[in-house]
Image 1 (cartoon, chains in turn cyan, blue):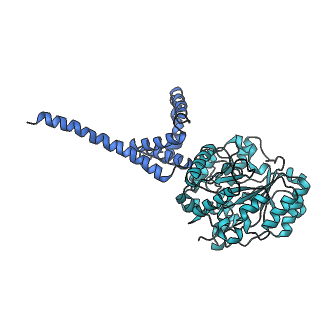
Image 2 (cartoon, chains in turn orange, red):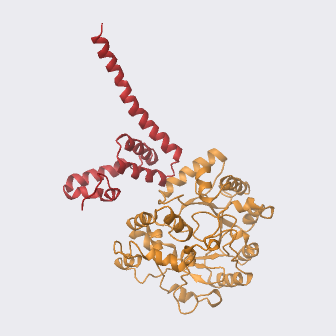
Image 3 (cartoon, rainbow over the protein chains, first blue to last red):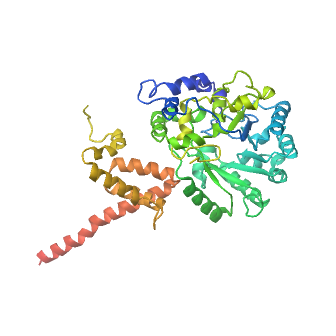
Length: 351
Length: 112
């Protein structure tokens, strides 16, 4: 299995190097205006958030997979894990602010030893919506995870699962050998407890990331194709398909550079800039928390170590909703990924 | 700036520039083009595969690039893409071979 950029000591494992790289080339030469200029031209500068609705918590970078496109640089060799103490801060915030959604991601969030405690407590205090972003294969990885579908159901978790394609070859190419077969088995287990089945009240969405240097196609058309193929071939049902654009950071950036696709991909993102997507990008109603409890505008900014721009309240132990909702959102050139075409967010397209 | 080759991938991005020298006809073409590829009795996916096949028949490198990307975006598999190219090639090959009948007719007419 491949290793993370961090353990390979790759020069792009440094966020400083990534940001320098992203700001050179077509931006340094003046061929294209940087992202913030696009916002400025639309009168969206400084870029302000709307009401906070989604509290996205990255409970650690450890993962049983090492996907080639991973923007987290997650993998089995990553040891960063959120503690129960930090989770408690998050729960206290959820309880005090009544933010609607707790969105758990990783790595494979299920690998955090306090994951079940965290979900159970969130359910107990009445969080309106609990999302777990599952890579699916974790459910089949070890007997201790086999009952995750039942656990999710008992805690009314909304499962959002990654599946880049409805056939084996492309899925395994992006996510590793054997991933497709295990993902299919996991989806069937989730269906068995009611996930994705009409009338069960248990919601399961799939996430599609393009397997390469191109933008996702029309979300509704891909959803139709995924539904037809997965039902016909494997009897699998699910609720929605979210198409997510790969942002040029971390291991996807490494892939773009190594395959000589970087510049062309960035140009595609810039030329597809959609002004109407700007008001609905996820950093406006979401904040992202890292395993240490620091706060970011989104999961991508987290991976670039761009903490939110406030003089205090950069950490969950010092949370101030008013400051968060009045902050200026930090942007950089990777943000073109969220405004291209129909836009992109953790909930799929935005327009 | 002169190019040493007839085809430059960068030129595909300038396709829209053809309207500069005849706006009326250029606009009509692009409107019509956009309409053609909308979902109709044929799905947009089917239309993309037809376009990919025809791109190979007319051997247009711009079109091949454009409809390869379009196929990938639509989640069309590599096997489907290659089958479409074989359909195009079979028609093109068949179109040559079927003229063999004309050759045979002529030869037979002229021969004792």
